[in-house]
Image 1 (cartoon, protein in one colour):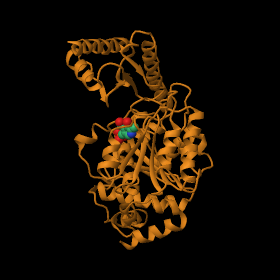
Image 2 (image 1 turned 120 degrees about the vertical axis):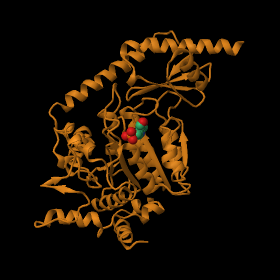
Image 3 (image 1 turned 30 degrees about the vertical axis):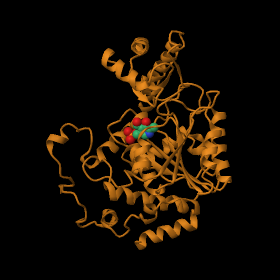
Length: 435
Ligand SMILES: Cc1ncc(COP(=O)(O)O)c(C=O)c1O
């Protein structure tokens, strides 16, 4: 093993024994070269006053060399904020602004120790960093049965981890904290689990109430008391899109300091909450109570970034930073959240109108982009294909019974008609089945 990785591991053993024990083989081997090109360049940036011949970009005059055909479309921005490489950990101002936003929107983080957010190539990449650092072949990755399908690739296919699911809802249609606890405690003999908490949930659009959130935290704690070390990853992709009486904070805050065997890891980003899907700007933040341990985890994260694609897109980071700093940012974002909330309300109104009861029920939802129907009479995939081919309506089939509808991309005035068409599709399929 590289001595720099060994040094990091030693620091982590001393200051974050749980984080060390949770590291995968890759996580243990990972380091960010202290004496490498990037660090030497960074040192020269502050000290090389005569000539700086370190950086791997081309310069001209006092700035980065660039082409007029690109700059003319981006003239609101300084070339320095677009063309040079961003540092692998991300633009410092953006990291600072995101941390300030996290604190403002999550009061439970006040006074807590946690690392600085590290910029990722959006949330998928944040999740894959967590998978690289913590998941080994056969490790349990615990998530509800209704989950974002890409976890399978990120944790299962890429890292060989074992996806363990529990039913998201209990019989009362509430979050099934008992199922979560059971799944964690079942890992007691292995002593390790990665727990993914995704609220608002994809695909159901569900976020727990305060009481349910406390039950989730208690379940994680009970798992730790049973001896299971846990990297608890909060996937906060749809953060802020809360429409009813759910919690309005990430569970990350409640997880920090919960138990010595729990390492909270927050994955979030601008993608969904700032409506910039293609920019690819996200963050990963470590919630060890030891600043030293968070620093080691940051170094290892930088190693994975450097080893995969060196650094994220600089223009995207500049665009997001500019938005966060703009005085109208919150107002504009709140307006868009309001539009999504009206659509969610309209969906509920249409579904509660009593027209569709023989065809489906719906899973509780109160947030995010989506809702899910639970079909009673026809298979989800058959219905998906049928309404696509015969009515031009696109939905996502999940498993045998569930059909995901993204109200985020439906105009409020179209919502009733779409559910009418889905219902018509159900009836047509039922007829075909009878014949
Ligand atoms: C729950 C969840 N997490 C993460 C992501 C990935 O987000 P990004 O586009 O920022 O990689 C998605 C996107 O659909 C998602 O639904």
